[in-house]
Image (cartoon, rainbow, N blue to C red; front, side, top):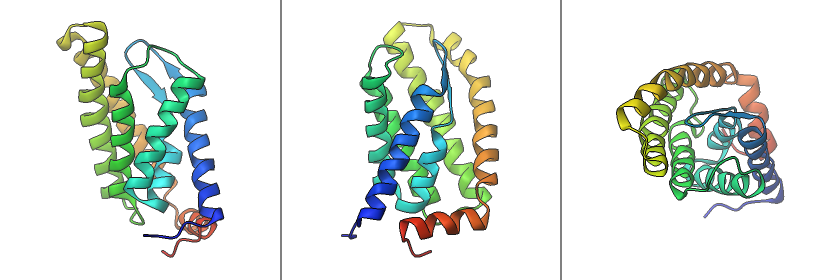
Length: 172
């Protein structure tokens, strides 16, 4: 088991707090969709710490966000989606950032988790028509995919990832 020092734990707490703030306070919540930049600290955490840590931080951040800044009724399915999103990002982005990995992780998160799973949770919560719900969410998820890939690719500058790795004392 890896030894976690105080600097790494502090960085994890900061990333969780950033994910909480960007995902809860600085997001636009519509009835059926949410636009947020909480994926940035999640991707940074994924790069530095891997899938299990990122999944747990992402799930915990979602739960804390719902406790501190609730915007709709709590539904456990969304916490599962947040945990799975962290896991997928961690699996694909851990110490290996390239365009293919960024696109694959983002496509899985946006189309499988956000589009299908979150649509299922919304359908269960609000008994909304599945075809109407799905049709409304597809364009938003396509835009989300483009934004996620573009932002993560810009953040993929070598100097940026090296600086983060040195902050976390991770050997790249």
